[in-house]
Length: 192
Image 1 (cartoon, rainbow, N blue to C red):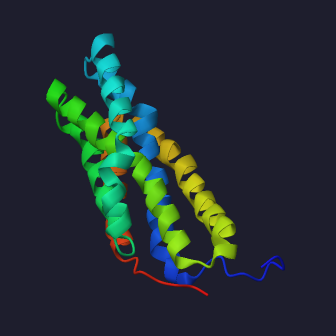
Image 2 (image 1 turned 90 degrees about the vertical axis):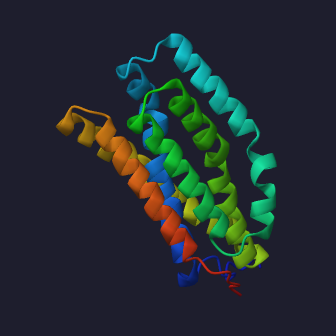
C-alpha cells in the first residue's frame, strides 16, 4: 500500500517491543564495560585478546546455531531463549574471573546476542502485512536504540556510585532476564 495506510504496529506487539528495548538496555552495558571489568579483575592483554577471538568466532556461528529455533519458535519464544542465554553470559564475569568463566561468557554472549535482532525482525515480519514491515521494524529499532542509549548511562552511574562495575553488570543481567520473561508473553499474532 503506497498510500501509507498499511498497519505497521499493534498493541499485540508490546511484549516484543519491551523485550527489544530491554535487550538494548542490557546488552550494551556488557559491550561497553566488559573489557574494563576484565582488566579490573586482573585479566591481561592476552586474556582480553582470547576473549575477543572467542566472542568473534561465537558471533560468526550465530546463524548456524539459532536458525532452527528461529524457524520453529512461536511468538517470542526464540527471543526469550536467547535473552536468557545472553543474561547468563552477562553475569558470568561478575561471578568468577576464572578463564573458564570469562571464555564461556564470550561464547554465550557472542553466540546469542545478534540473534535477538533477528528474532525481533522475524516477529515483526510474521505479524505485520508486507507493506508495514519497514515502518514496524523501524519503530521497534527506535525503541531498542533508546534502551541502548540508557543502558550505559544507568550502568555507568551505578558504577560511579558503587565504585564497582559489578553493580551495572548485575543490573544488566537482571534487565536481560526480565526481557526474556516479557518476550515469553509475545504470542504469535497476525495484524492486518
